[in-house]
Image (cartoon, rainbow, N blue to C red; front, side):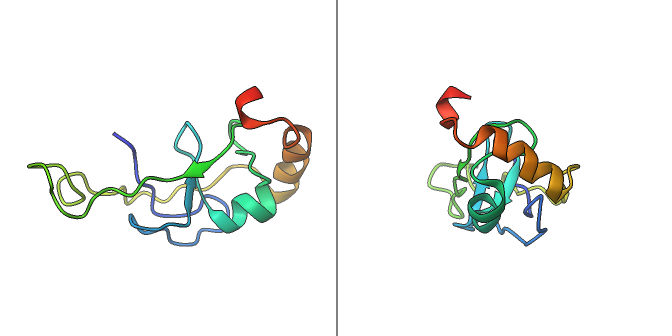
Length: 102
């Protein structure tokens, strides 16, 4: 099941489970749309992959036991281990390659 991380790994802004501004890579690294667009250049600093909008887990159980109350978001805040300088340098080497070709 997808882990819903509570924050942007770079700027630490809160990303509620229903946030339309949350972006994830295929490893579930989580960043806000602003950081993905303005700092990361759609390059995950952890794996080099691209980002997509994080799905929003239903708040209402339309199927028994399948909703936010039964599968709550993570409370563990995650932060990237890379500095902004390292991220900028890494993204520059990858951003011109389409995510599907990385």
